[in-house]
Image (cartoon, rainbow over all chains, first blue to last red; front, side, top):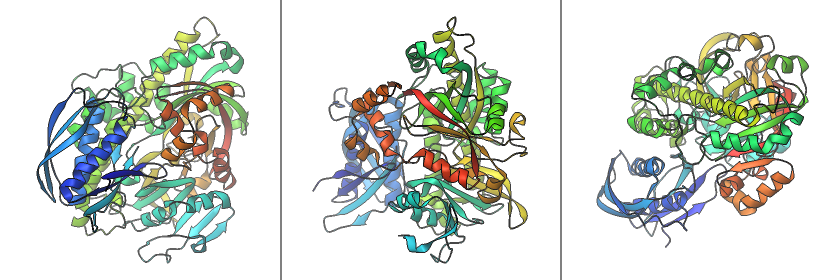
Length: 136
Length: 483
């Protein structure tokens, strides 16, 4: 099972993300976002840094939005993109993790924001699945 | 899904979906369009998104779609939704992430012939003077506390710093400053994203374009706006950059719980909102105004850079390299305005998401120099195609809360566009048409390929034909500068 794939959306960019559980879904969403932010030919792992992140929300969807918004903020601020995520603690309303990644000089897409557009995390036979639409 | 069965034609260019179409609709939906553009709109979720906005508390008269409507997230792009004060809602998604994304049109005293020999130098000078690219910062370093001034004063801050003239401010929507902006309602994160981006273009569909006024359709208005055939003009299309994106992100997140508190049921979570007379609603309004002011200041500083580029490239070579402001107007904004509904004058919050304000003659918010002809409306086309200057009308005040279209409107996804068009090829094609291209990214160029958009001339024809905003001038590009 692929953790994420890009799907078509007229004005924007969307990702279908799957995960065995919420932790896996959040990690795959982050890695999917990285492919949108950084060119695959770039090697964002070169200057490695670890960043700790703690986000709180009030349901799994808002947790996903808060988490990805944090990553978009970092990318715009100093070009940091993560290519590995270690989850320490996760609940439907809280995520504590460490992101390992590096810096890119040029971002592939200018992602303005992650949206709530039709956002719903659904249970499937394999685990969880959702489609996240980004405003670019 | 809305299909053509549910849509009734009520005028040559007006189609309606009755409020009985869906149980949760509070008002009908109206689309300004023609048969072909309507078919396009029905090809994605944009009309369903329009219907969703008709469910919002406090919505009045109709929810409206302009002919350039296309699918957004929550609200469609090209939508106009007015809600009545005091307890109607304000929705951050109804404004969008790029708060006060808009267009500034600058005029010159130069003809195409005068500039032609120096066009390459001029395009390069603009590209060098106006920082562009994803998340890129600019030359303007703000002192501590100065960002708060930008947020609360907009173009007035720019004037105090020597980047604007009185005439620039007079010829900007709301004088380049929305009253009631409050920097304290803007998060530290938003400020961090915005602190070094004043006077930068960014990436995506934002651009600076050198144009030639090709045709004039309305002599009186053209003369008043300072337009003539063969004239060189400049368009600046951009918004509030990362700061505005973060403001929207913050409030869409915050309002997820607000709607639960107020018992507001919504068909899409991106439509979250708050009553205008609530503390949450007022906080977003003040933050949105602050981001809008940032955008006005941003376009003002870019205009200053463009002026500098004209002097740098053309001084001593042409008679007069002076660049003057024609107008600056936003197309992603919520404004508190007075409009007549069912014979009564009421105060409403007009959400324009991918729609341009188009006030008619004699409105006090139209600059005094243009008041008897109406507000200039700036409609940029897709890359390499024509752009339009229209003027607002009484009909717009009557029918569309003083609003019209904002551009060509996307017809193809960015991914699709990139599969079909290769950036380098597109560049060659544009250069083949005599259009200079200065672009930071070739794939960014491909995403904005003209074939990815609807035909702007057709979109404008609908607005003109329905009398909402009438044609003044048609501009064609000769140089494109983008991130």
